[in-house]
Length: 350
Image (cartoon, rainbow, N blue to C red; front, side, top):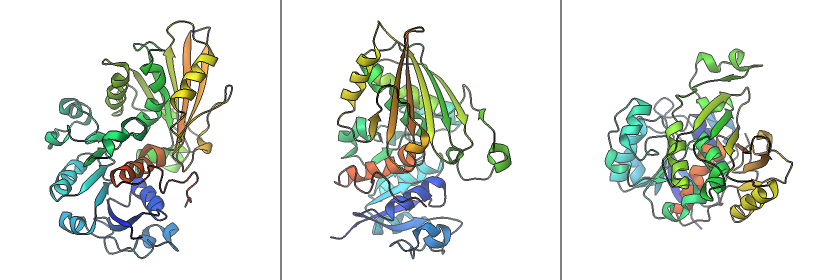
């Protein structure tokens, strides 16, 4: 059986690297175009030695060209920064391609909110209404026919999956939610900067972007949809001295006297048919090492009767579940494949 040809614009960042890792062994998709403005002409194996011995090792990187991509591919992943992605997406859609955008350019439904948080006027606001938010567990039916997917951010993925059952059922109050989140350094991207140098990160742990992080409106938008009204949350990110992984501890005040048994049953029933979300046994809490390189979101539940709070601990891999693996799951749905195809429980790690 011939594979479906796909392209990747921006292969040299961490999300591009992760997509190359996954596509190298995907049974039904073939990466036929991988683009880079700085490394065009090199083979993918020169950039990423881990693809040696796979069918991608001799793939030659090219300059991004919409006509070439349209002639070669059925779908294209965009792994380029916000601001740049919107123009590329518009050009590829005009050429008749389907697009999965890993940037933030189409996640926010209100272009004014986008401009406020990203300090940039949206140049293609007409496409925002067409874009589907790419969280497969929640929006699979809308992802299937979509032309444009807005792939969720990594922090929002961990938060939304962690709070979905509690908000949808009214288990917790909506006015006093705290999202205390920690990410590995790959979440900051591959571009060199002083704060993420080894000597700055090693044996260190710090908060950043308190009250100003750009994932805040995305989290509030999606949680608001679950609750049925607009919401404001306290989102507090931190950076960990590890390569990859997110651990989010989420606090919500309970309505009434729910027990751990009740909450655990609620979450277990809710995610019973979503194989990538694992509700851990009572008394167990997630760890980043247990989700590394996978699509799993592990959830641990605590009910604190003293403070009347539900505490949800959510762990994901920021590069796979929080970015490239999730983008691949959306592409699977768009192309008529099973959502799990090419996303084995433990895909090979470089």
